[in-house]
Length: 556
Image (tube, rainbow, N blue to C red; front, side, top):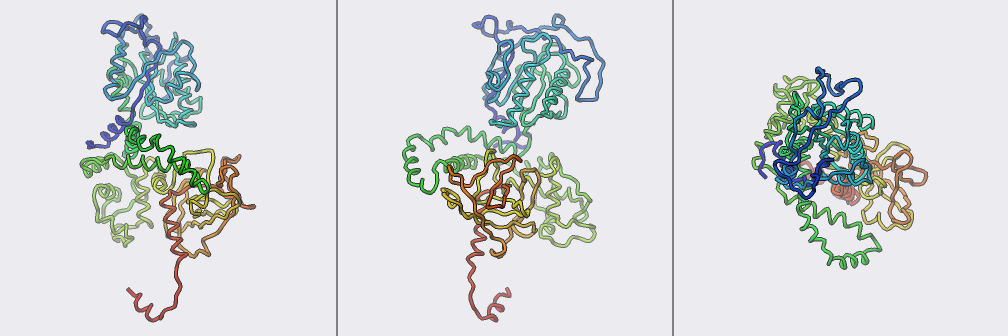
């Protein structure tokens, strides 16, 4: 892939990912629907600016400007509205843009046509004044509220960019009105760099003005664009919304799977259904074949993503440019490495090997002239890389170790499940072989291994359901000290140990009178490493040999 900077990479990922846009306006079509667009027809007049009772105080900034007379529609210049330019601007990027003109007094709830249309689109573009005389924006505000609520709580969990694209003269009044509405709905909108960008949950709203009307000034001028420029601006905004190396890789990964849908479907063709049913019949005594399909699909998705090339042509230059953009936190208290500030040395280390950091990694003694050093320099360096998110170092460690739980209705007990014993506050990991946790007909013993808070061993960092982070360790020790068993009843229908949320929104497994709270699930490879290590402990061989010989030959 050809990209030199992190900005180029994010924009490239955006262009690969975005596929659909919907433009909703109350004056899309001509009076004669058989008449095509031309350069002269389809003239729109800007509608009257919204009036806020008590003045138009700016709720998102402290900047006060002198109020000017509100222009009325008859005094405003006429504006050509080119649907062809708008649709064409998206078509140039391979994005399908649907045009929709709702009926007067249209519904905006989750069962409405307009909501369903917007729900599946990557980009949603709305007019502000639907069939209204006062330009209050009641319909777009209600629709945006419902889209944000839906995107935050139920499937599809959608990252969505919503644009208000209007000829209403005052973008500031729209920003204030929308901010008030979302705040009242307890969606906690947050301005991003300016008052015309609002972030609420997984959705971002940007307010843009159409050209050709009353000239806008100051900050509003940079948010005024033509129909031809709309697609480029929204792609840039979506890229900015998901700016970064990892977000861009995630977008590229999802786009790659979509672009290879035919190849994936070819692997799961219908003429294999008979083989699948035979396979299911042969193994139904031990496990359910339908439960194997996610792993099979995941393997194909992974193969597609792995075969895609995400690395820049010049990795060193790309990382060097990225290092100039991504910040690190200065160490507190300050500390130096060979007389140089630690944050400067750290950024150099991102780009290439640095001999100054190697002694710290090996826990060698620091130079006395550098003054006091942190007890755990590597952990301190990781914290320095957590600038905008103080838990980023823990979050990244969990990303590599812990399986994300996308389902919310239930939790299963099986290989790699981490439980909290509510009676003593101890954490344990389940080490039952995967096949032994399926097709259960009666109360079954599950083996566990205690996790400790020692700094020695394999780290397991995860976020508990209450939001708190836990840093635990799998420590190799005597099975008599670390291993224990618990009996659990399986679900009568599913024949696995499964629980749903209780009244406290927790997943509780019961073994006799004891209660265990589900807290996390290890990724299979990490759970397998623990099982292999325990297996080695259980298979140690005790034997007799000459002690002098053992001692003499073990000195090396």
